[in-house]
Image (tube, rainbow, N blue to C red; front, side, top):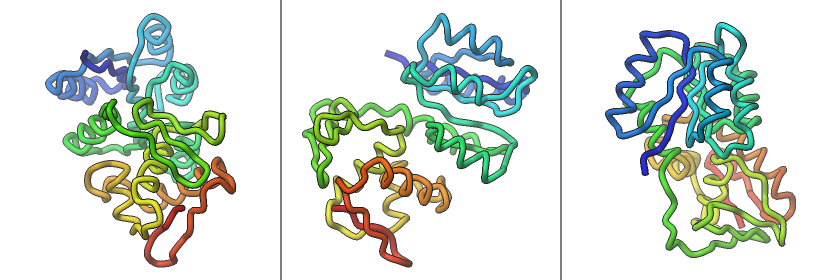
Length: 218
């Protein structure tokens, strides 16, 4: 089954090229130019991923993201807004990526592919500290409670669990998250995710910072 993508972009030149490139990769793409059109599309269709411009004629991409919060779709922001505060807020609200314009098309396509990759249904569960990770379902549990993790937080937890007790450099962790070049993600982004994951895991998992090198989890 083909993955479905909602592209919300009011720049027609960017949208035309991006729709073509995504369709060439085999995705089913719905393009909207405004918040209103995007909300109408969300109400009638199910999407696996949304690529959202931050600044739109009738509002912001944040409004579209909020409407998609419980649909199960991942969100990538694609915007000229290169402000650290906005970037951090986007990640904290559940976005899996934040790409600033101008962007490299092949890099964006690689990010999209990584987000939409399907976990191996034959994978065995993993344990890390007091957390059990159901890799087949893509869910993590603390005791009997399902952890509310974003897609990147889950992949970060999965990377630690697959390398339990081992010292991982920041580059190794970034490669584990993206399955690609660690340069796709800045270090401050990783720091935000480590902080958020620690808050959600509490004392169940010990994530040790090794200054100047990286992290170790157990």
